[in-house]
Length: 142
Image 1 (tube, rainbow, N blue to C red):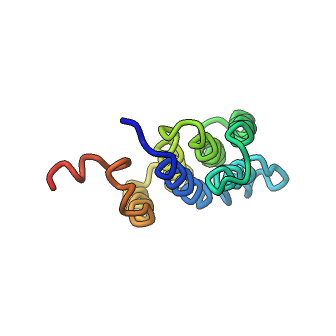
Image 2: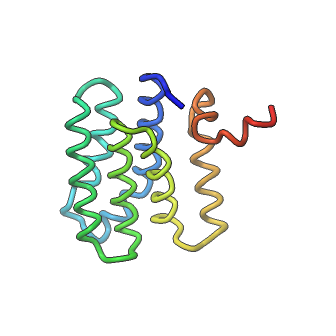
Image 3: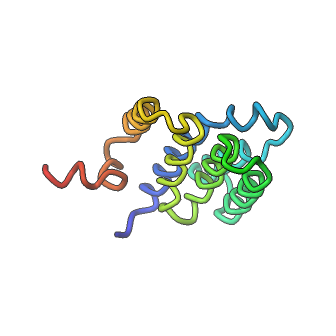
């Protein structure tokens, strides 16, 4: 499926919103490491047209490096991954879903009820015109 640039920008903004919710998880254990936060900001800046895709990709790489440096299997690592994928949505919209999924892991861990609530928040904050791109099965019966 190909999507239009405006749709990709909308997905990148949504991915940034999802990832931003998890930033505090990373920043609690890494208070002086701003790479994930800068990645979220870069994803938004790309969507606004303020920076080129290459800058967003660079910020994504830095957030991914922060994830690799975080404790293995930790919520902080998942939060940094969410931020990295949010910025990477600038070059590939497929990263959008990864940003959302890693944010859920960072915020909820294995708490299924909390994860469901976070996914409901995510779904509710996705612009309606983008729902078919993220949740195609929801639109299959309409």
